[in-house]
Length: 194
Image (cartoon, rainbow, N blue to C red; front, side, top):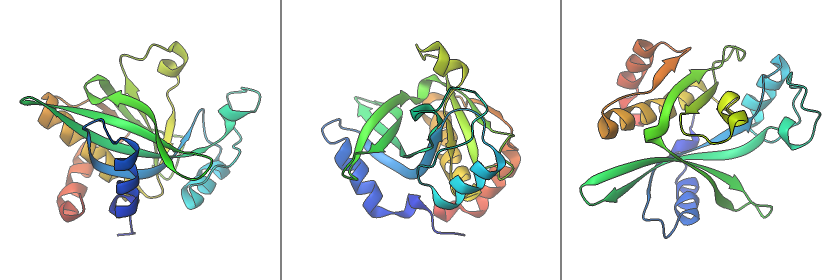
């Protein structure tokens, strides 16, 4: 198995530092690339091989600018104890101009309704996460796409999310475009790496 950013202790410490004072504990942190729209075939290979910001040929016709740029991010799965209850969060971290990781977005996993692997990415490393409480209609209709370097990284992140949803919330979100049985077998084989 290729070395995963989830095993990067320095990355986890940087995420912990970015959310210091929130009483949240980082369970898993992984490097991803965030984008909007549909990947061109060359865009997918560039992102999965480099994981750095590159202008992409998007088919949404947004007219250039920041929307058409793939942006390096870190996704951190966090929990917070509140009395006897534990709350689960998905945090998106961004890099400051000085290269320091800082908190950017916060999503409650209880609102995660759909996980979808994008069919436009033949590698299977790109997916979207649908949340049912988003106020912005444009984000709700066209959620950001997240691209991992390897399918093993994608599986590791999604299995972590699904396990937390099952264990803490008693349900899992709808899963589209990926064989759940295949992912369960992957998790069983790679249990030591989760």
